[in-house]
Image 1 (cartoon, helix red, strand yellow):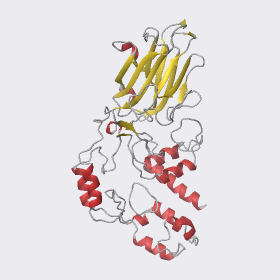
Image 2 (cartoon, rainbow, N blue to C red; image 1 turned 180 degrees about the horizontal axis):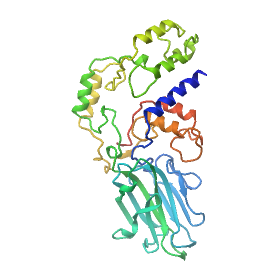
Image 3 (cartoon, rainbow, N blue to C red; image 1 turned 60 degrees about the horizontal axis):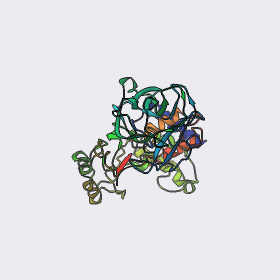
Length: 400
């Protein structure tokens, strides 16, 4: 009963405080690194690229080390020795947001399995958004076997909204024929967007989330210099308001008169005086801090509870570093992984992720970003993951 009350409070506050479902424009598992070798992507889809449509007998695909530009793997799509109708196509897709995207950028290699030259009159490699072709290898000059790095697919304004869109990589037959000699091969790697700090996300030392470590972050650190966190122990419900108010009281009241606090982690912090019971003494303490401001030490990079020279050293070590897309062409660039609960891909697990999961509760199916634990249904297990990862930050790419 108590757990239900707390979850209800979480749901109400999240839904009221966050109405939009939109996420940040990022491609996940863009270098196909997350699963290692996959011999048949129809049997095991690449993580995040979980919408695989390869018509049986005509097309196939795998993830391998045969060719790569960043990381160790790439995606291959190929055609077989069978009859084709013009327009037959194989696709691998994931759901993305495109609100801030001007270009889809990717590396591609065209060829055949038998060593023959790629014939553009017969086959094309494509990039599609919601089933519409936005890039066609037929426009390449020259259009022959070989590598084509840093290709750009333009994103039309009609896709730049708050909705999810389907991004697809594809290989298509341009002619109706029975193929006797060629197995055409299109290989993809490092698919990315030119958005959100260039797709890199936030550095831990980027205290104000503007993609740069600079004097603005130093200013935030100096304002908290030698400070301790304020009222944090009374902020029982973590939200973006940072004030002691009714959501926190809802958590507190759910443990009222509970006398088993040592065995329940201090009754979620409601046993302020650590007496083992949530009673009138704790209520008096809570009332003394009512509507008090909560101060979190974002500048406490070392996590030792104080902003000091250790944190300054970390900031200085990143001084003038940025994640604004300047390093993505570096050959030492590699793909990291966001926290599992960062379902809107904005580099931090917060109320937005909670609201999205609540909006998807009880939804069933495959390829759902809200299904964090891959159980096939969005449920309280996924909500629990958000709580476990709360306020964790990460970024998408790094440099070795």
